Length: 145
Image 1 (tube, rainbow, N blue to C red):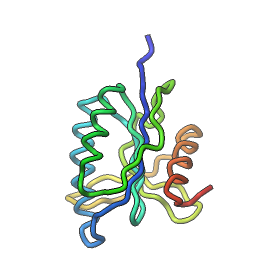
Image 2: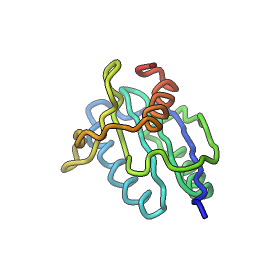
Image 3: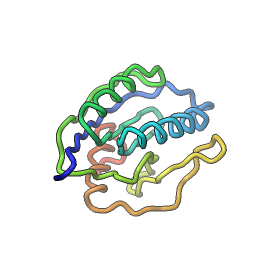
Image 4: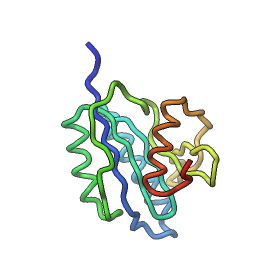
């Protein structure tokens, strides 16, 4: 029997000051990676200078509960759901976070190294991932393609 997967995509406005950005994003990444793995949640978080857009994939009740916790986080405001729907399968089964690129370039997978966010080894997104990343970027007006 196939796994039931629910995808929730939200966007928000970052309240993280620029001078604390790496530190705060490293903290978000470390906590989310650990908790999400235990909860069976996968997805991708795209970041720009002032915006977040995140896709969460997993069991509907778990994803919805996680989103309610995320919604209350004071590191962002103007949180709004872009999409919340059952899907045929996970698109981001191995993704955690990515930085929105300069115009026309691929998104850059990120990871935490000693409390600083650094680019991870390049991992070319497949067609399905690229399509969803494009939709996500377009919700915040970044690199509309």
